[in-house]
Each structure stands twice: as C-alpha cells, then as structure tokens.
Length: 368
Image (cartoon, rainbow, N blue to C red; front, side, top):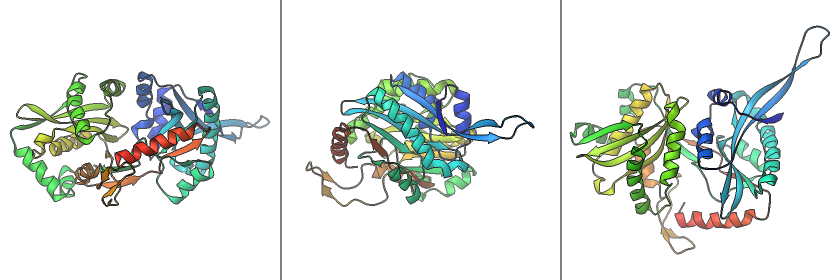
C-alpha cells in the first residue's frame, strides 16, 4: 500500500460515491470549508498496489487502486494542537478486510505530518460501524478512546425510498398528528432559502437556543463559511418556519451524495406549542425526495440508556441527557439508529494529557 495526496475534486467525490458508510464531513466541500476557516488540511488517498499481466516478453505492469480516503484537519486550540480525521477512513465496501493495514499506513503518514506541525496527538472520529471487531482494529493499532466526541457517534437515519403516505404511516402517532395540525394552520408557513443573508436570520434563533441550553454556539462566520462552501454545488438550504409572519423555527440542511443531513436547527421557546418545527422537517424530507435522495440523516441523538439524576464532580445536578428532548423529536419521524466506533486518539507526546484532562472536565460540565 502507498499513500498520496489527492488534488482533484472529481477523483475524491467519485470514490466516495462507491462508499456505503460516509457523511459530508469527508466531502470535498467540507475540506473547502475548513480552508475558509483558515485550518490547514490534507486530502490523503491510500492505494493498493497489484501487478497485472502484460504482453508476452514484457514486464508485469504495476497498478494502484484507490481503496481509502481520509480528510485530515489541523486543529489548533489553547489545550493543544492535533490532527483530526472527521467521520473518516472511508473504505470501498469490498476493502474492509484491509482496514487494519489502511489504518497503519495512515498513522505512519500522520506521524510525519504531526512532527512537522508540532501536533501532540492524532484523533479519528471513525465512520465505521461500532462492532467489537472494528473497535479492536483501533486498539491493536495503538489508539485509545478519546475523552470527548467531536462529531456524532450515534445518529438517526430514515430511509425515504417510499411514498409520502408510507413515511407518514411509520411516524410516531404524535409526530404525524402535529404535522397535520401544522398543515391546517394558516398562520404557519415553511419556506426554503439559498440566500446567504438568511444565515443571519437562522443565527438569531440559534443564539437564543445556545443561551437556553448553555452551550457555546458556532460563530456567525462559521455558519456563513459552511453555507458558502456547499452553496456553489447547490448542496445546502436554509429552511425557515414562520408563525404570524415571525420566524420561529429554522434548520440548515446539507444535500450530499444521495443523503440529506439535518446539520443545524433552532426554534424559539415561547412558541414551543406551535408545531412549525415538525412541518419544517417534513418539508425538508419532501425536498430530499424531490432531489432523488434515499436517506435523511437527522444527525446526533442521545444514547438510549437513561441517566438517573446525579451530581457531577462540579456539583451540577444532572438527570436526562441534554439531547433527550431533541432525540424524542427526531426519532418521532421513524427510522433507525447508526452507531459508529467511538472517537479514538493516538498519543504522540506528553502534551496530550493536558488536552485529555481539559476535555474530561468539559464533558462532565456538559453532562454528556
């Protein structure tokens, strides 16, 4: 096997078309977004070498088949610098038997990059199914479980390759009822936008949600750059829900390679009894069907196990998972969960442990 940089968008995206497990976090445009955020990136391809027969008397021809991709991002933070592969190590379905060797080749290359970039560890958020076998591949390769996740490790997905009537029939009874009530309500209006200025409209709601749930939101610059990275290929839309001419619900949705991702969402608490968010999701699903998509990914959900009330080391009382309400909302549309191997770290320096303890504290404070 050998590893090389890939500089052509067509090669990158065409390879991902043949991968079963993937998210937009490995897309070409996500890499472009990272560059807009002034993060250094590497697009790496792993090739399997083989010898092919040639004409009589001539030497065998060596061919190189692309079997895996990895987008790598340099993350510079106060707690330390590291190399990050988000939802990565995409493999052709038939090449899963080579995953241990692929991981080894990638790590060896990243060690060289890390030395040049003064990174203290390598982090991978795998897009591999969570199984004992896949977990062991990372363990045997020298990885350890990260103290915190960077992107969802448990997502909720819906197969939309059926009629609208069938999709509605498979929803939770309450969800279906609220969609129909919203459709009857003449004061509720849902519309779709591809205008950059509507990112600011979304952000107003998003900031309110952040204050309500006590988390650090993505910046307006982050949201705008994400929109600008995907909009040239018509891969992103803003869905806005109005009630009596006031925007009360919003979502940023990414359409990529036959899959739709509900990436960001927000709503106003004072209108919690107005079911605009339910109709908004239904309109996004219908738009996905119009575009010929097969799956709707609702993004992250809470673990299924219930947490009993307890106080964390900081004395903060914790009960249900912070995403419990959002999870109930998402799962009401029908579908199934997808679990990925938990985020993995490969330690390169003692400096890693400062990052480790900072993230452990952060996770505990968030109640995750």
